[in-house]
Length: 194
Image (tube, rainbow, N blue to C red; front, side, top):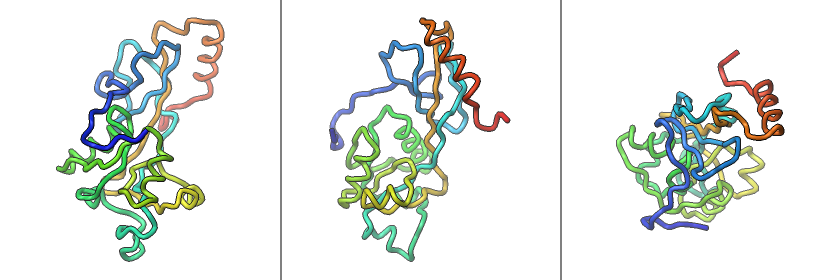
């Protein structure tokens, strides 16, 4: 489903302790959260976890004829270069959108969101049709070619998308969940924790 701004957007996630977002209404023993800030802290008395399990750069995906890529064979674009461009993004309430909104606010502007969609591959497809610049997790060269886009590293500042796995502090509710949690604790490591 595509949402065209300025229509209302349903908040799909909520902020916990100002540091992470999680899907509201989930009842399972584990949750995947999108971290919005550089420092990842769960910041909730209800959740704990091993921290970030996915950490990848965000890029600007554009159609191959976009002026951003034809300008001197550019391979990167400063965030300020997106100031007046129509952007294609995940909806408000998602971790990646929070990263984009926060970075733009720190750079002194509000992003001009032209389209929103819930899946990064669909964002890339909209960008391939020249409808704007999609801000998405990095793609391999083959993936970008498959979507019909060129990607530019977003710089000044570099943006990153982070995903973490968390669980309730009162522990898993089933024996299978307990075994799975023990496995996660031994296999997943927090970046930078040696």
